[in-house]
Every structure is written in structure tokens, then in C-alpha cells.
Length: 260
Length: 281
Image 1 (cartoon, rainbow over the protein chains, first blue to last red):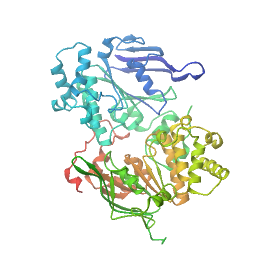
Image 2: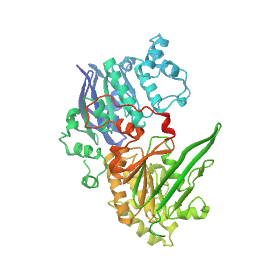
Image 3: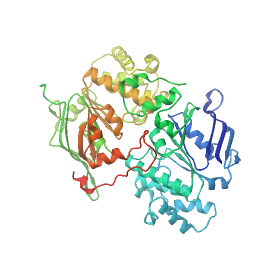
Image 4: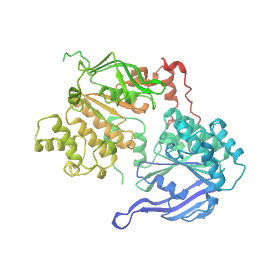
């Protein structure tokens, strides 16, 4: 079954002559249970696609269907029970004066789910923190622990879709490995559909089944992670991105050009 | 300067900050020497890599305390240098490039004037001469239309161009040593490669030494000549960049293993378990 279906999505910012087309007619679909990577450099529009899907951006045209339901610019409460998001910066995305308990209790209260105590306990165990962390404040946690809390906040509603915007790029590599392992386990245990936005091809190779490469608001290429691993990209832009990800090489750097 | 004097000698460098529970040491006895080469300092956040770079220029903010058995640049003791002498060394002899051009450039001054100013502070050149040199330098960091960029304000240029402008400004006084603290971490990978190529060329053309501080092991291994790996304020291992894959210290090995790789199938990554013994290793 198709979980997320995007047809001809366009997102524009600004008015008149200052209009910037951030997403310029994207069509893609993500199957249920799939882990899909959206890759590109800054300004490619990858995060904007994610924000349009999540309902954070309502200035778009085209068609977005999630779990078979057509979505408008405004979302119903039920949508957020189905689809949750984790952001890049665990230092900015948690309320600094709320305890972990209060952070996790809020979505439960909004959706009137009840049984908050047991749910919080369960989700904290699920993300590998344990109930000892329940009454701590964000400043008492490390970056990796904060990102676990952010993931717990998304999971406490038991969504079927998790949207991840650069979830490990603010973390040290050893902590990144822990979070990637956690996301893999959670996906397997809960049958989650994941969309991962990142600039890091190695992270996509580790966590995703399929990926799309974006450049300047357009979709350059869709491929499987298996093809990525073999270096079997068709588009020159993707090949350049792949070469740049393999480390510094004087001759390679010379060969780079701009793709419009 | 005798030919065998290293560009930089650092011996038992310590940086400490007073806290409520006593002195906390961010750098705990770092020693190395640097010639005209590219030395990478790698570590995770809090490892003391940036503090090591800053303490060379005596830019550790008070109440931080820097001590060392020896901290010498071209044989000159930096810890004994007067503030006036340090101002002369900073920029002119040792330059530093920071991570984010957005915060390093003056937002209300055109980039060209900032670069020209950097030149005039360290030389007796007049305004016209400084402008000419600034335009040359913009061309040297491969900015296509130097005349146009010269009159731009920092918010009018992209991140990659901003970092090239920073590098132009730092290199215009022709320093002997460049300390680059995560100079490309805020940039896209392709732009990162292009900026590194510029640094690489400038190093080899001018015979400049460079300290490249970064958290990115693969990048440092492919760009630098030699690497120091720092953990909790100490150097736990040093090796030739080309031999990083054969690193022996369990921390280095653990870091390398925890990196996801494009050519490996998906699967759990080995997680670093930190051995308290590394703190003293």
C-alpha cells in the first residue's frame, strides 16, 4: 500500500518579483513500512517537501495523500496521531523549562489518550532511556539523550509514519551510530514508515531502502539504496554528490560544476 | 630562523577553567610539533580540539587559564609575548578561520573593505594598493567576479562564498600558519571540496603550515598529512593521515567503526563503549 503519495508538489515563498520556488513540481510515493531518503544540498527543497507533508507549511499546490487520504493545507488532529516529525536540533526542539515527563505528557493530553503514566514509561524504555530520565530537564541531558526524548515525543502517539529532518547531523559520530541503530530497531518493531531528509548519503545507505536526490527544487533521480551502494547513479549531479561524499581529492574537486 | 626550528612547538599544553567544583581541564597535556604541513586535529565535541587551536593564538577567554612547558612559534615563546606582540602575530603570522562565515564577517561593511582592512592593518599600504591586493586575493580563492563581490555585504553572498571571503581575508597578510577550525562544516559537500582545494593549493604554493580542526575523520584522513586524535583533552593517538585505517587506539578504532558507509549494507553500527582508562591514555 502507498503510505505517502505526492503529485506535482510546488512550494513558493515570497511575492511578486521576490518569489522563490523552493519545490518545483515533485512527484514521489513512499510505500507502507518503507524507509525513504530525501537527499540534497542546502536549498534543494528537501526539508520543504517534508514540511509540506507534515502540515507545517500550508502554502503549496499539487496533491498530497497520506495513508490513502487526500490532505489539504490544514490538518485534522487525527493526522498528527498518524504522522509525527523529529527535527535536526535536539537543543532547540525541546522546551527548556519542561521536564521530560511534561514534554511527553503534552501530546497524550492533546489527543485525550489517557493512561499517560504507563505510556510515558513504555516510550522511554522504547528509546533506551528508562524511567530514571522522566523528571529531568533538557539541560541535564546530552545531545544524544535529547534526540532520544524528541523521538519518544514523536512515538508516544504510536504514529505509523515518522518524518525525520536531519535527525543525526547535530550529533557526534559515535552518538549518531546509536540513534541510527535506535531508529532501525523502532522501525522494525513498530512497522513504521520513515521519510529521512539528510545531506549525508552514508546515513541514507545505512537506514533507507530507497532514495530520491533533489537539486534546486527538482527531483533529479530516484534510486534504490542497493544502486547507491554500487555507485549506479544515472544523473551526473548524483554522481558528483557521490564522489564528494567519498572524501577529499584534489582532482575530483577540480571537476565539480554547478547543476541548474 | 634556523632551518631546523619547527614552525610550531607545543609541549604539555593545558587549558583550565574554574568551576564551582574546582578547575576543569579542557586540554590536559597536549604536545606536538608542526612543520610546513597540514596537521589534522580530530575529536568529538568536548575533546578540547578547538581549545587547542585557540590557545595557540592566546584566544582562550578569561577566566580560562593556558599553561604549557613550551608554546613556541618560529622559536618565539608565545606565552611570554606581550599583548602588543600577540596582536602583531595574530593575523600577520598566524591566521585563523572559524566555522561559520555568518558570524565572522562584519555585517555592515562590504566584504571587499573588510579584506582590504585586514591587509592595511598589517602593512603600510595605501587604500588603492589594498583594494588591488584584495581583488587579487578574491580571485585567488576563485571568486569569479571579484569586482562585483568586492562591493557586496556579507548577507548578499552564499555560505560557500562567505567562507572563501574569510579565507581571502585571513591569507592576505601572508601568514606562516593557518589554524582552520571546522572551516567547511557548515558547507555542502561539493562546496566543501572546492574550498578545501583552495586551502590545499594555497598551502603548497606559499609553504604555509596548517592546523585543521575537525570532527570528520574521513575528511581529515583524505585532506591532511598527519592526524592527532583527541579524547577528553588528551591526544590519544597520532598517525600519518594515510594510515588512519590502521589506527590502534580503541577510541580511534571505535570512532571509525561507528561511521556509516555508503558501500556497506544496512545494519546496526558498532557503538562506542567508552573505557575510563582512555581518560589517562
